[in-house]
Length: 384
Image (cartoon, rainbow, N blue to C red):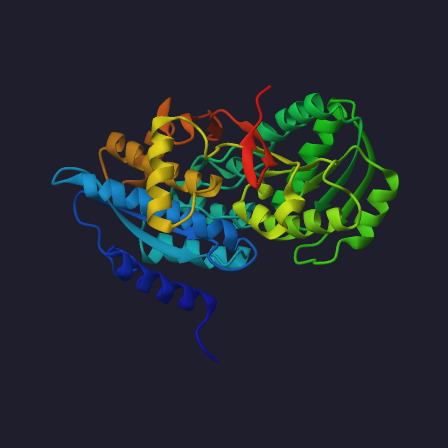
């Protein structure tokens, strides 16, 4: 019958690690003194693969830099990469393997909030710190005191996005379209709805779809007839790309803004939708154009290594590795999970590619969001 998804992912990770000259991929990798074994649960396949690919790249770049600078007395990272396949059950399998077989000191990931909602509970029970790098749904860090994230929540980003777009476009009435079977897209819908109501913007209709849908013509045809000032969408990038493309083809022209949640924060949206993505707005935790010196160096190094510019998901993964090393140094140990958890709570004002970064008391990200608009095939930061 062939290998399972987990075994295929594990074999792929080992091959990739050897090709990159990295050690420590796999359960037999042993962390020597001064080495910290960190697990990475990322969506390398499945619906969120577009995010997982750049997350892995961002993490690898950070690991290469940290290990190259470690010398004799510094901390070296021994990474263990696993594919959560964009599926909660596979995420559970991966977390169990990383925690109990690989005995990692912490886990970075998983990619999707759906997966985090179940897999993070395993880490919490086992006392293993987790840093989510793209989990923006409500309630993730409420799972417990070992759960952190460097990704801004939809609650932190969406209200400001609505405020900025309203100021720029004068929108008064909108249509709302969202995925109703995913924790992230449902959470985004909830936040969008409240933000629109708080801004006294009329919601003409609420339409929904399911993960994996390809045809959105019925919903979009009904929306078009209502002539909204803007279309508000909570979707992952695969469905989001289809919605944007089909909306434009069905006559919801580029003069009608499309406002997306964090799922739109991927170059794949622009690549897949082409010119249809013009006049798409999205809130973000990071932008390539930031003049932050750390970010300038990051963008240059990432582009040179991988042949394309990074996205927000790469930046958040890259930042998470550096945040982890900062905490490991202060923990005074590379294998004490409790000491590392305690050190993570003390991350305050750390210089990262995301800007000055801190964890809130609730272990959520504290950094400055931006609002972007697709112009000329690029995400451009809007100034107020």
